[in-house]
Length: 440
Ligand SMILES: [Zn+2]
Image (cartoon, rainbow, N blue to C red; front, top):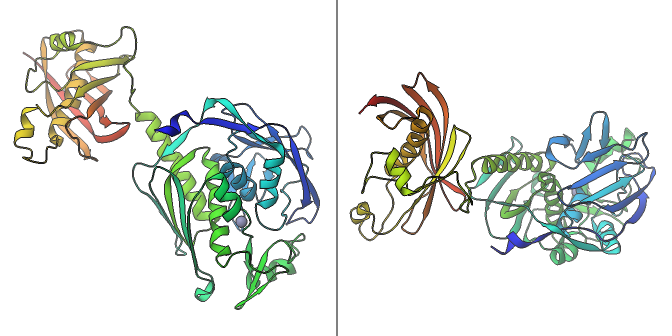
């Protein structure tokens, strides 16, 4: 996959932009600085004592009402989504964003000022490769208000978005791949839009001191009230896409997948960002090594056969790649068309039986248990298999990585193991197995 070799990017030099902040109406200067690889995007409040920094990460997400606010302790940075969208889509992985206020300048309500800032500062490649979140299975989030986002597998980052205002006014749809050039021309210029009935109470409460017809498109009834006419017929749907990019930047991952969004907002975007982060953590935890580890630690087929009594056609482990401590190991099995079961399962459509994957898990777990007991004189019998899931079919030519971790071992007689089989980094099957041991 070409994405594996993409380098991380940061700024070539620092650059600044000034303007008015939306909520306080005060003047603010925002300055971007280069940052080391793997440091991500950080905001720094220059106006506060000790100039605290906040990581632009899902964990620091505070509120999602109207705009996205991040914070740590009592320190907050509001309305981060347009800056984050520009940084992420224009290819910046690592940066420090300094501000002398609690909010970036609102500009014209679009991300254009930040795109210009990024171009002014310049972008340079770093030595560390980028991290990607490859969507393997659909993720889905939904709210009571009718907002919904589905994230589907795709080898590029794409967003398709529908937008509908109150009573179906301004129903729009826009769909695009996200690349720096597309973002700059098609998405960044799209401005924030607000409904008059929503902003009027805020204006009365003096909550949007910096707000004017120059930094948002105000919709009243069917009319558009703004100094400048709409920049695109579907400007609102495009701005929704802009906000999605900004909110998903909080995952700290470059997404390879297709976002399908229906009436999205910051709240549901944030929920998707959380779901991605959760999914990513899961993938890291179960990701099998793709390369054979150098040096000792594993077991070759002869050593496996000294431990396991199983033989052809029922030996489901070719090799143990390595152990992680005493309780965890990874085995491997190459699935060839010559496996006897493919003749009948199924003629013309060879698929590895799921139960044999469970058997493979059991054999790898047995290796662990016998090693733990320092004895191969006993034989393990299955007592139960719980939470078994078959997620993807396994075909001839696949290499099955079998992971087992002992979660409970009682008195050398009963043991529990948490297991999974993986092909190309994706979990194809998993289960919780329980064994009892009897002398041969
Ligand atoms: Zn926005």
